Length: 634
Image 1 (tube, helix red, strand yellow):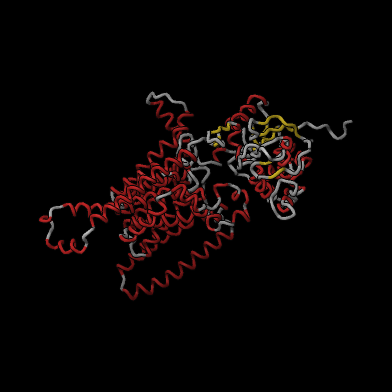
Image 2: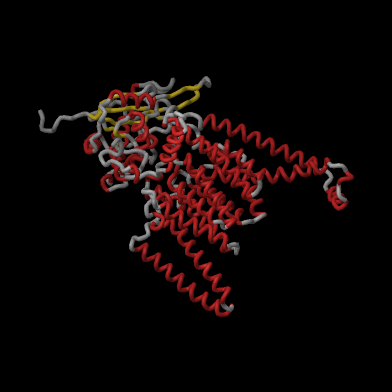
């Protein structure tokens, strides 16, 4: 009752329940053991707990694929790599906190099942897949990777009865279990993202039937029958898929899935997806920042996997290649890439050290203990001990720098809570910005309990949880039209915005402004996305992005800014009274420290809003919607 006013939101039908169920189960289990702990503390430490489980699973997975030594190195890397720590620190109560463990655990069980053909391992893999589906929407990556592995084994002639048993059980049981989750429903048998798994399941049946016929027919008769059956089957499958898609029985791919295949799709068609910073393409700097040494050791591990191809290695190679592509398309998927980078780097480092350490050991052995057949080899390689020592030393130095890099990145980038900001002053001292909590506490204690707050969707969860106030939209972006309405209110002049705010029964409006403090992730920098999203529906057809650019086609807030920009509600809420403020020495009043511009519209008053609260560093500004007199009143 505190979200998506006035529509409301069905919680069970719009979220994955795995995270909440896990936290509640752990809470009740601890109380069953008479360990008294608050549910909030369970939520805070849930991600670190599961990250420790992830370390164990990475060890098991890498050991199964390569060796115990490689498993130990990979486990040590995943324990400190910034790309994974970013979502596993204390207080990170998010789906990814447990989903990465679920994903890797499913992969481990799949490799065990495909190696042994055991019904037990296959059932465990299906249950792990069900847990993954209940935790995160990224399960689509998993349910496409496993069929891709099976298909690759078929093409390379490695498909066996063990793989057939493992995949059929995992797919059938896993799909039935996943359909029990309300948010998923019949998607596994209706949507295009899941059709690859269904298609490979059908291929498995055809392949098994073909092998049965081959064993009981002559080669000539088999070839004739095979060509006829395959032709009819392909035509039948194609027609069935085409007709079902045309009739709407098979839903098309979702916008997020299209974005992974075509990075420009979301920007051109679904701005709400493209507006999320985590959905932007990953830069090379981000790869190095989050992975460091593993960027260079990844190809080494990939080489060793190719050199000794096994069914398990083929799966790891497919995981590596697909994840590195998707991580390049969407920065959020760096989280999926980090574990396989650790596994590949662990394999590369382990094999490298094993190779050169043997050379050091063999040179220290007495000459009489060296077999005669190896003496010629030792003569041909006279300084192998020195070379081996140099290589081992280089690897040790790289590993040391990796540890220091991970510690520094974790401390600087991922240790501070997102609700409390930190920065360095000119003298190097740490400055704390606690404006968010200050503003939310003001909302909680100075507004009516039934007050409705309008803000951009980024801050919806925080307002609901910390201020306990009803919000119009939040981070569960399930209704694009409603979010578009908020964008229209922010992008329109005051008179038009007032109509929308009254339509939504808004009492207060909250904006984030960084022009005073230098905080770059403020609403002015997000404003273009509000314009695009606001103009993406018929009600917002009058909002054109080009109207908010200067005459030279630039996005500006100074005197060259457009009239639409200067008159928009967002501009006025952020820059109200800002033209009187001196932000930097030697700069004019109204100097925006983020845009490095002097604002163009300084002297204005608000007609439909009144300033209610501005935080210490002007990061959060809250306005109260006025109750204007009826037009007929005198």
